[in-house]
Amino acid sequence: MTQESENLQRAIGRIEGQLESLIASVTRADQSRSKMYEKIESVDGKITDAMNSVDDLDVRISKIEPVISDVSKWRERAIGARMAVTIFVASIGGSVAFAAQWLYTHLVGKSS
Image (tube, rainbow, N blue to C red; front, side, top):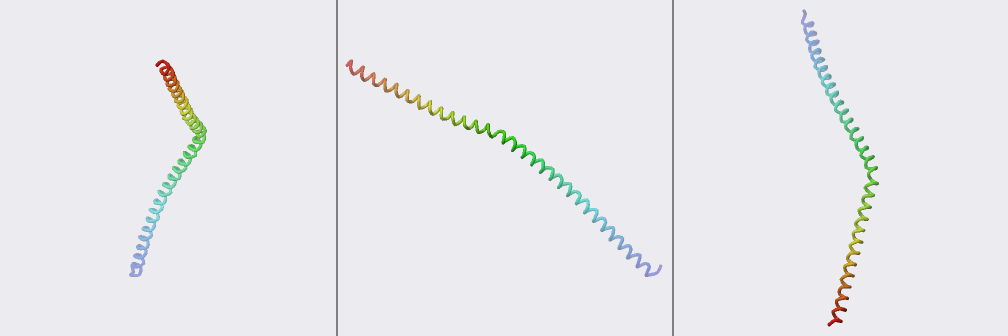
């Protein structure tokens, strides 16, 4: 083999080595991209599941809202009724005390 032929073979060898390195690099990049797309798809699925859960909660809450509103009204009415009963009982107690004092003063005052 001549010198020129040997140089040509070495150049071809270097090119083949660089080509193999380039192919390996592209293969690693493809694998990395593939993993990245898998992760993106997984995250997308989780986001979709979360959105569906939120939509389900919205539906359930919209069904519960009237009941909660009614319970709040009943609670306010119970508080108002308790206040009315308290006022009524206090006024009866005051009336009984006034009547007792009046009777005591008029009966004891007349007997003395």
